[in-house]
Image (cartoon, rainbow, N blue to C red; front, top):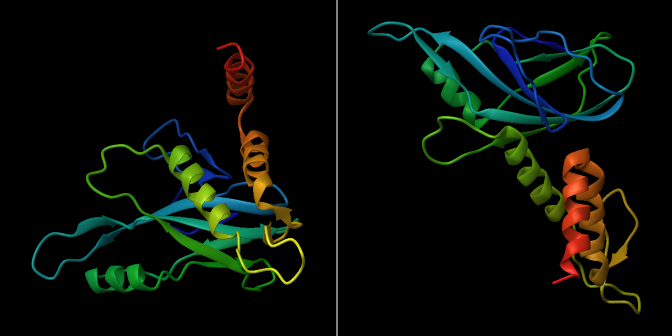
Amino acid sequence: MQLANGVTLLAKNGKVIRSDSWFGNQKKIILKNGYNQILVEYSAEIKEPFGDDEVKILSSYIIDFNGNNEIVHLSIPVLESHHDFEAFKINPEWRMINSDGVVKKITINKLNKEGFQLGRNYEKELAVFNSKKLASSIDIKPSTDTDNNTIPIEGCCSFNKSQLSKVMLRYWYINASKNVREDFIFWSNHQYLK
């Protein structure tokens, strides 16, 4: 993936991108084939009508997409004025185009955080966002079959409501780091000793 000027990659697939220096932003990133999720922000110098130019930074955006053995370019319209920035906030026009010029389907979400922001834990915020996204993808509808407790999940087989905790626990365990898995196993083994 190639990033447009002013675009900074903050995280990929739930893991924060670490940089050796303030200006060490990568412009080319290698991602795995299949589903990917990136967290990006955009900054630009904006011309103010009656004063000095000002550096503005957009909120962080989560972009989900699928890719397979291709080069893609993440772009954003040129934002030169305060008006451009405000318009983008209302309608964020991120675009991803592959090397054949085909516009790829992407899902865009703003990663909001209320209040003063001195530092952010993007990995934690992404985990919370993704857990809410998983929960919101559960479509609870009255069933016409005999089991009225079945919940269909997009892209997955149906399961009984009583299995929801098991499915979510399995999801988080699979996506956890080795250390978190070990901590969880230790914790669960010692719960029965109390």
